[in-house]
Length: 500
Image 1 (cartoon, rainbow, N blue to C red):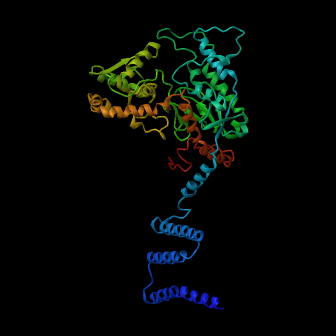
Image 2 (cartoon, one colour):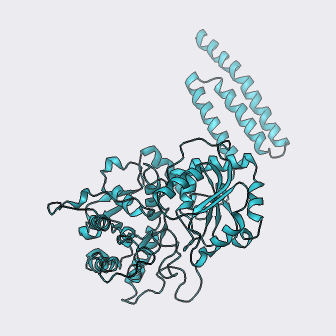
Image 3 (cartoon, rainbow, N blue to C red):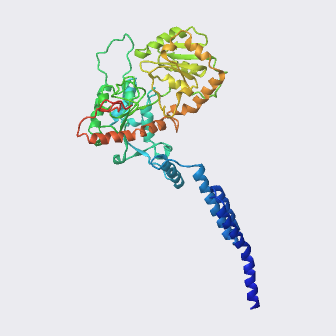
């Protein structure tokens, strides 16, 4: 009994200070105005910590963590508010889901490409005819034309993309597309016709030689028409009217005979100089680089070995927009530190051009028969800063590359003013020249078809971006009850309202 009474007295002694504090706090609350948010947090913290002093260590730890979490939530709510709802902020879900996808190792679906197995007359047969026209001899037993080497020229995109898809998947790591063997799985259908090589199978006749009465063995026009006839018989061409088919026509004159029959396709072109707006546009087609014809510069940036201010070597007399070349020749040919030469395509000319570009700070790129030309890409891989005088030029991969960071653009009307161009280039500081060169070195992989992550991969990436538009157009045409769509280039709609 005595022990029990002692225990009861101890309990009262322990409770008295706590009850006294609680009574004082209650009285204070009746006297004071409503506390602010911060004072409420402080009071809650004190109370919680007072209570925690009488709890075991584990409970104290849990309570501490809980308090920190509450404070963090309140801080974010008041100091980083979110005013937009989920419907007002379409990227909020994507951002969160991307983190989850990255954590789970998930990948975005790869775009699938089916490579048509064309009759050999459209692929290696073109290579064979090109060789025969230049004096090659083949035995009758030489039936395997697939071993023939594609000849080098400035429009080799058709070969590199075909070779890329022909490689094993293990050799195509990093590619944005995967080749599929089942056409039912395909998003795109690649047509590997060597259209640019076909155009030059028959070598041009020397001036003054006269027209030959003998008909050439090979006809590019006949091959173009035979190709389209073959395509129009294919089930998958009929299904989409050719919209999901990819055809390389990088020479401005390639496929000219049948262009209206393939204008729905994704065309890979060097520019739109010979195409009408309803035949080609940046919306549905892809601009690809020329294959550079001179050796890539292997040195580092610098001006010590680049004594020439401005270099150009090419045909002086061109048609249409290229007439500016003759004017530039007249203005520049007597300027100090400027080399401007007339030269046609030949092995000797390429050697001279390579030497000139590798030892010059700037390389001139005037318009030719069409707005673009191979020497622009020769200049880039030479780390020779391109000076572009071509007002209508379209450039490859401009969604990724800002050409102003490694090229100089001069309007035609200014470039033909005597003294203007040279004065502008001489005013560029050494530091700025080095900045241009560093950027050229950084971006030149985009113009190297043989680089593992070079032009081919970037071209395929550009093609994949056309897929939503292609699906839109295919589905749209299905509801038109057979009527032909009038907006194949998606430049205008049927109510004549400009959409692009």
